[in-house]
Image (cartoon, rainbow, N blue to C red; front, top):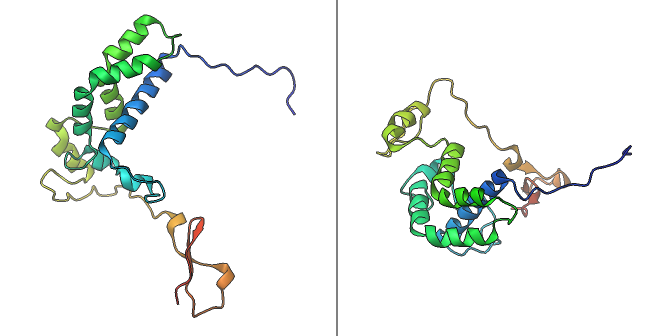
Length: 184
């Protein structure tokens, strides 16, 4: 049980950091809507298969990529700025609103670059080589000795259904929470 008085939760609509995060999320959502084909959720249940990986996003040859996002933001800056201006909380100080809207592209790209550890093109090849990534030529560069590698996802490991133990003719697998039919 809770003892004493409980403070009512409070939502601070004048928080510029929250507004900045919402702007970034909104711009990424709009970019994805503009660039991705309409795919029904049931047709593509794997969100990351559609969006790609961080290294894909850094690759100019991929459908969704950092360079294309910057071009799209620049081409649509005025309409995006007007749209965002319409939903920013009125509780934000006018100077903060002006700063958010005036620095729309630079702040968004800065937040994204920081999140994906983006390195400008001048240092990309050198940094890629250091990290064992694919260079611009498409040739895979050897990974660093002792570099940590992601392990297999245990939820995706096939397991024999316990309900079918002893049925040697049927091979049934379950992946994570979903089960697949038996194959004979």
